[in-house]
Length: 128
Image 1 (tube, helix red, strand yellow):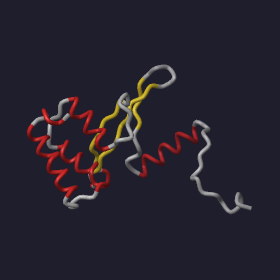
Image 2 (tube, helix red, strand yellow; image 1 turned 120 degrees about the horizontal axis):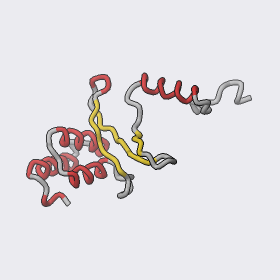
Image 3 (cartoon, helix red, strand yellow; image 1 turned 180 degrees about the vertical axis):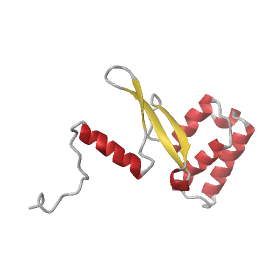
């Protein structure tokens, strides 16, 4: 796929492959390396499609997804944003929370909608 890619993209991917092979980068750092590469390039839609799946191989071909760069707390990270349809056929996007504040807001929204919320931990009274 990337044989016909822009030279800067091809060189960046070759560098990532070289660092992985020489164990200068751990496989778990692949997503961050791809995010850094993407931040420095203007990508064609096809290149963006395949780079997203390179970082997140569990995505299905029909999944509409993209990588977005964020820097919560000054730490740069790559976030997956997946677009799906609701019951009415309207699109909405899903991503993980970027900060504890977002987690708290989501929790309050769940409580306001009367969704059952649990931390997944059992309490002393429930384990008796």
